[in-house]
Image 1: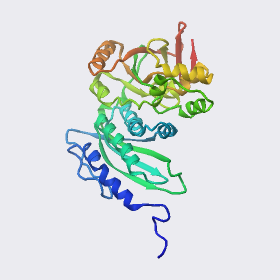
Image 2: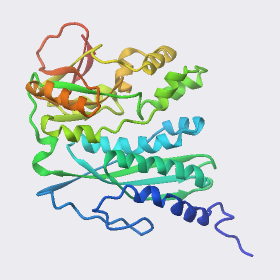
Image 3: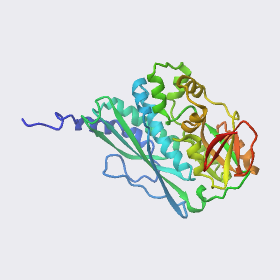
Image 4: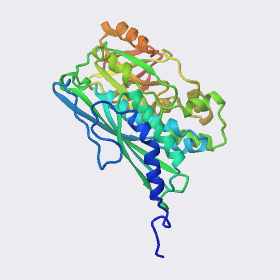
Length: 342
């Protein structure tokens, strides 16, 4: 008998078994615009007729080296939410509404139970984001990954009315910055975190829970407040320094009031255990603020109240100012030229 694909390390039957196992999780995410079911060559959906002049908004991302900790601490459902959140929060930052999500799961040897846990987490996160899990791909790649390793990538498509895109709204000095809380580092800075852990630092239970906690999905509360928002900034890789200047013009700078929000304890532990400079913390992590919304100062209280009604404990963390504005001490200043503390 000749060599088979299974003997080479790829179990097609296990892949088929996984498809059957995940069908209920996937179909539970489908909205009325989905025209196809799992198992086809491609997904199909129609665009809701409620859109008058629809724009497609799309993004892709992965979980990164947080996956290593997920494998170490058996937190596989959580990384499914991380995967979805990193994509849909980016779409949200444009004013788009997530519509369809696709995933890619690659591993050395397919463990059907583990893969189902990951995809179940992806499906749950899609429901939180209000989008359909339109399909995906599972790749078994023996020799490329070790048997116990896997990697994830995600792809999201959203929709927006052309005249409601946040990217088209004009910002002015004295516009207010509203911070939405994060539960921890979300999915950024984990190469640094893993380096600290590898040096023999054992985090307390609360710190470990925050490090492993899944990325917040801000879609539903932010969409509920969209008419009050001028711009939105997802604080991801690069922290405050890299992300904030992406949403305001070069003639303005952001003034962040340090101490205006409660920083999760994991960041204090990371800084102390790793001997990390404060500036590096703000350059690498979200420091407890996962997204910043910019609004007119006259709408700040209304936006805070609306977010509170959506069960989000948002806080005003700063404002925009002209480049020549002088600041009092106790602030983080972010501009297109860089970041510094006043």
